[in-house]
Length: 264
Image (cartoon, rainbow, N blue to C red; front, side, top):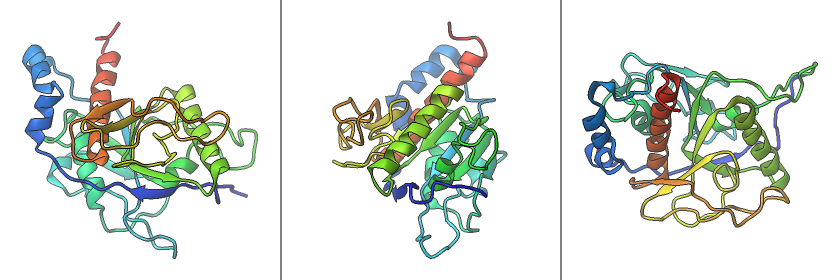
């Protein structure tokens, strides 16, 4: 019998998305200065496998297929492989996912255009992918994943504090055991969302340079308490949904550099 986190699954809340001028943000974060210094040696994220986790943009409470996939025909994704992992996605693409993906791995709109393989999850399916759910000797153990950097431009909460604590422990355990990099967005404006950036320990929580985002960790239980510094980083974008993939793309550049021996 297959067990899933029924009752513990996050209630995913979509973050609004406002695109920004691509050239302006790339200059603001110092990428053009990096290009001027490294020239043809500038990393592109090539060889780094990534994942994109999205909240569905439609109501799935009645059993409708979730709409969460980026548009594979979008020109920024030419030559890239986008694969839906788990679940049965709708044939309709998500404009939010397409915009986030463009900033994360787009050919001309991202600082990591060399990323070519992207696994895409609906948020609840990603949560359930973090542990072995089938009975057997490995039941409950952390799963592995080939994805080095995962972008989360969504927020949410479980059915109760116990659910939130379970999900946060699964996510933090995944990071610790598999060295995966989880880049997670915060709420736009003041908020109290525990997942994932609001309370996670081993994630990179992302806010906006204007400071209009959730401030500080949210109390969940005795382990995941309030008062920790949140966010970890900020990016000069109009929403946290857009700021998060900017940081994810940068993480992919650092991973490629590390793989190629460019970091001590």
